Amino acid sequence: MTHCIAIHSYKGGTGKTTIAANAAALLVQMGKKVAILDLDVYAPSLHNYFKTNPKKWINDFLDNNADIHESIIDTTPLLFPQGQEQTNSKGRLYTGFSNPSRDAIFKFEMGNGTDYWKKQFRKLVFLREQIITKLDADYIIIDTSPGIRHWSINALSIADKLILTMKMDDLDIEGTKKLLFEIYTTFVRFGAISYILLNRVSGYCIPCNTIQSNIVENQDHKKVLEELHAATGANSLSPLPCYCDIQFSPREFLTVINNPNHPFSLRLKNIINEMTNTT
Ligand SMILES: Nc1ncnc2c1ncn2[C@@H]1O[C@H](COP(=O)(O)OP(=O)(O)OP(=O)(O)O)[C@@H](O)[C@H]1O
Ligand SMILES: [Mg+2]
Image (cartoon, rainbow, N blue to C red; front, side, top):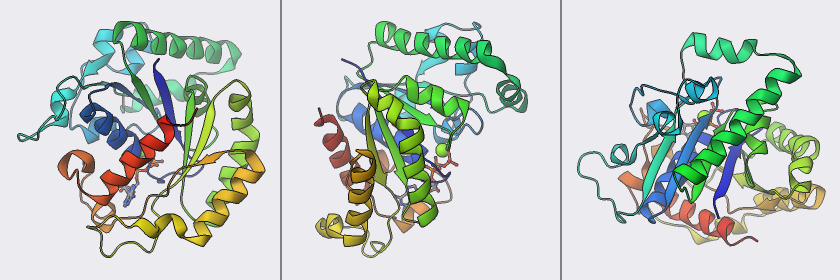
C-alpha cells in the first residue's frame, strides 16, 4: 500500500518543506521508493533544495504537456552529492517540481470557477494514480501552501495522512485549531488521519549535538497538544526542537543526509515511526 502524506500548516515558515524533504530522504535511506511533490504552487522551493532546473514540471503534467516519467523525475543521485553514501541501494527518490516562473504562478492564480477546480482535482487524482502504478512508490510526500487555499485543499484531498506543522505561538495554535475544525474534519470523516507536529520549539538550542530525551515532558507543549486533541481528535507527534545550525544555515540542505546523527535526523526518524505505526 502506498502511503500518501501531505505536510501543511496554518502559517508560513513552520518547516513544511524542511520536514517534507528530509522525511523523503530518510525513507529513501531506508530503501523505500518515494515520490515528493512540490504542491506549494504559489511559492515553489524544492528545485532550490535540489539545486536543479528541471525540463518539465508538475505544471506540464496538469496541462497535459508531459507524461508521468517526464514530470516526476528520478532525483536519487541529487540526494547524494560529493560521495555521500546511499545506505540502501533499493531506495529511490522521484520528484515533481513546481514551476516557479511568474507566468506559471499567474496561471494558477487566474484559474477560476467550479469546472476549473474540478478539472485540476481530477488531474491531481490521476497524478497520484500514475505515481502508484507507474513508479510503484511506497510513499508520496506532498509539500503544500500554508493556510486555506484551493491548492492546499486539493493537495490534502489526495493524502491519507495529514501533518499540520505548527510553532508554539498563540496565533498559530488558534489558526491550527480553526483548520482542524473547518477543513480537516471532512478529510478525517473520509478516512484520513491528522497529526500535529510542533516544530522549532524553543529551549533546546544548546547543546544541539545530543538527542535530549526530556523534550516530550515539556508541560507547555503537552498541554497544547492535549487540548488540540481533545478539541479536534488530531493525534500528536513528538515535537521537533529549533536547532540554530539549521535555522541560520545560509542555504537549505538535507540534514538527514549530511548529518545523519544530528538530533534533528534522529528525531525525524522517530516521528516517521510514530506515524507509520498509527493504524
Ligand atoms: N527544526 C528546525 N530547527 C531550526 N530551523 C528549522 C527547523 N525546521 C525548519 N527550520 C528552518 O525554518 C525556515 C522555514 O522552514 P521551511 O522553509 O521548511 O518552512 P515552510 O513551512 O516550508 O515555509 P513556507 O510556508 O514559506 O513554504 C527555514 O530556514 C528552515 O531551515
Ligand atoms: Mg515551504
